[in-house]
Length: 328
Image (cartoon, rainbow, N blue to C red; front, top):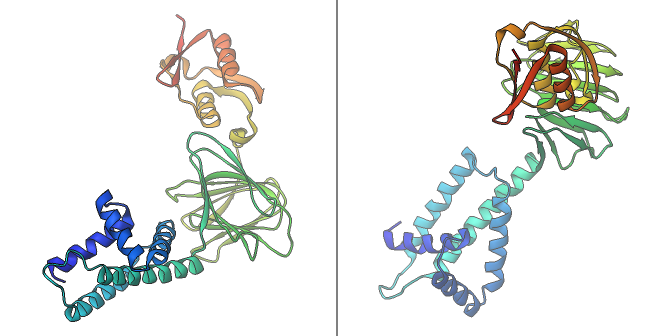
């Protein structure tokens, strides 16, 4: 394509991308109005916006399709006669733009068929509650992400999880609920359980509170059925049933804490995880102090005050965190 024709193409594409000045916009829209292409111009703008909203247009196939379009442009340009005095060949550029819109519209339709639009709930420093279309409830921990398609519950109940969440699944014997996370697939009919799946895919943990859960490796045929109270970990495609020794494993959701002769450094670890706070102990001499206490949905400030009174400590808010130190 020669430089002059490329300039024509750049003008029309800049118009659709919103990167034109007022004079160029007025010139193109006046031409569309005079040549009875105003309706088509507006339709193309809507199609561009719809295609762009997918945020998932690039692939090897679409890249090849673009090359084919530009090949057609080169072929057509050989048959076009451009006048030296003509400032802008709108018909030619518009024809090319329409072709691109058709191409993108086709690809957009294919991607919607293959990968229906996803709903995404993502947390950072907070926790949130998600109610799905089937009535299931997902308590999403901080720094976690839940994905599911808009067609969820129509043919299959499936979600994808990165991070940690507690699930309360609505019973439906005819339609299993499936969770894909890391290298694991978790399948249930109706139950409640916790899933921990770090983003690095190092492991997946499942703790069942009620009902039954099937935990399977997506890489091999390893499958384990878990019942109430069972706790298992999938790592390196191997599944192990383990004994849960952490009484505060679900404290992030329940806000119930139980410490029995627990070292202060371990207490702080649990508090940081539960309340998404940054508590620091500034002295090694107090890290091994042991705490025995229970807290049931108590505010963090009250817990910190209780710890300070118990061990004669002081707390100070510094840089969005809390520093604990000895008064002496």
